[in-house]
Image (cartoon, rainbow over all chains, first blue to last red; front, side, top):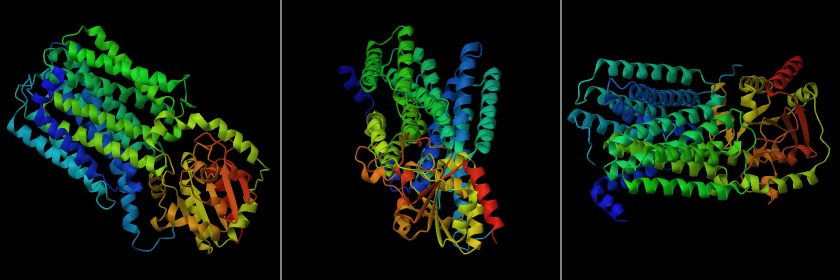
Length: 113
Length: 469
């Protein structure tokens, strides 16, 4: 219990930050239409790829002589980058399709096959 | 929190501030159809700024060996991620999201394992590392199971006897061990590995009993878990970009999960603790009673029926997408329209494999936006519909959701296809639907089955239709 209280005391600003960010997260996506659920999930997926910053940090502080650490570091950076790049690109692809559709909708429907 | 390794270049902090703002802004814009694409782009831009800031505004010189590996990893990651994302079929979107999610989780776990020896003395970082390992592991192994379930490697939900009890015990064990490791301070490494193994096992146990139809909800939930793991990483490094991004995804992801559950009219607890398993026997029993004769219809007869109809509604389901029949159905719809038949698509909110997935799939096949009609709007129209063509959909037209309180899908809003004058259901066989339950609409007096693989059957139908002039 004491550890917990000490912990709270030591990181009070951080904890406030966390609480506020939680509320921002909830507010920011309030009232999203069902059509956007899939792209939004994929977009959020890309954003949590921010964990790659931690991976790069690990890598930057790795000892060049420590092969195991280097290999693991390389692996995490690779996984994180995949998460970020793949996530954003695939979200863009989905939204591109929806957008093409939206642009066409005010005009008439082309009766092409 | 103090960062033992120093990561406080002023320009770097500026990059992270920019990153945090773009994440909030990007997510906000992604919530509206008009601005969604811009929002995604802004988020990606902010991520790029944060990544390059981390690499270039560092305090220590970079050794050439480390730099080589780092840039190789970044380049390969970008190339593989880009190509995969560009090439993947839109139907495989859920698999892809779960795979990327698993990678994010794995990333958090390995970071935790590598940082553990550096933070044995301090309670704050130790908590962040342990939480990152536990949450990341659950997310990683859970996503992996979700991926295998979605691509069909793992079939039916696997349930150990009293799995809910077992899972809860396992979770309590994981939390207790993690708490003990946090309190105990410098702990021997084997215990950390036991924690890792237990958390990985929990991810599997958590996901394995859940049915394929609920996987999107599970992925969305695991998505927010990974966000949380990233946030703990941010806590460890006092990295505000990681904190903002992680927490945003954590809370927005949780809300999105709840929104998806709402679209399916099922509480989250139902999804996680498995209502599908509990009552499927009852549903099977109920369906057996409802069973009657099944009629089938051939392509030629159906072509005539459609040709002389006035109003046709197509109910597309995931089976349509699996068979890659989106383009054929669009061709069929255009031909019927040219012959004066009014054709609309009835879109159930959870049609496809994720909410909104069907809209993306049909948009890919150039189906016009105005033709896609949402459930609330189309339901009153079914009574005036001559033919409703159900293709690869099953549970979303199952009348049991309205009538049978014992059905696992009872209460889910459905498309009232059974009210149309004629119901044509295209299916490959009489196997049960995605949710694994029988559908009494097949035995409806006005219903005929149009058997065959969606693409092949629709191509035959199109050919027959063309021959009528």
